[in-house]
Image 1 (cartoon, rainbow, N blue to C red):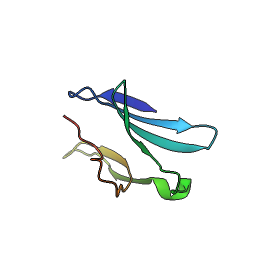
Image 2 (image 1 turned 90 degrees about the vertical axis):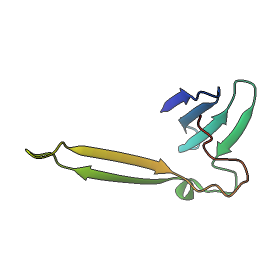
Image 3 (image 1 turned 30 degrees about the horizontal axis):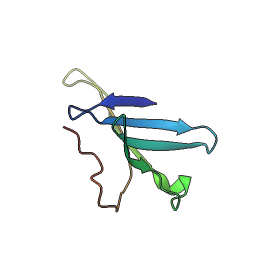
Image 4 (image 1 turned 60 degrees about the vertical axis):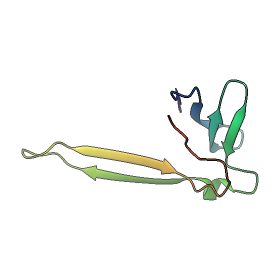
Amino acid sequence: MFSFKTTNKRTITLCLNEQKKQLVFRKGTQDKLELQYPFESVTKHQAFTFSYYVRVGGTANDGLDLNYIYFANDSVIPLLDIK
């Protein structure tokens, strides 16, 4: 779905596992996967939360469309150490 590199050489990826029909988040370097979510204990319906905000534009302001996808991670590994 998307992928980008951080300034500290990490790759952040959100992809679709077509076999399991669920989203998968991955963070790591070319040599080492540091975090993959969801874990085996998380069902696909519990894994991610989606929210959005829409503001229609007009003469006084621009339109705005914000979309968020997030998850809770209880591990000690930093979720997004983006630098």
